[in-house]
Image (cartoon, rainbow, N blue to C red; front, side, top):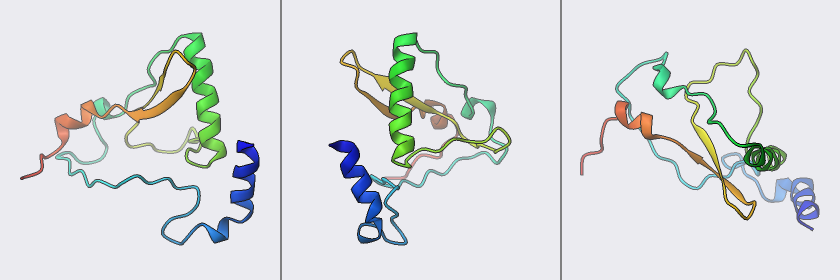
Length: 115
């Protein structure tokens, strides 16, 4: 059922998307973060993937494939420059997962908001 709905949405995507908000973009909110370093960013902001157990890795692969099918994620080519890499996929015991960002290293280089 879910696959049929997704297929139908993409078939008639012109009815659901605009120039500013394409159907594949899921935007909850945007935040401007000002950092006090210039490119190339420090290695602390460019981290490799976190280790995962085989069971967790399997759940991750399913989650990543689903997000790629929805065009929320895309593969990055081996020659493509990636500035900040911090995605983490949290897997629960019931097999469900969600993607979050580990932005703790970013706190070191960000300029706090003035309230």
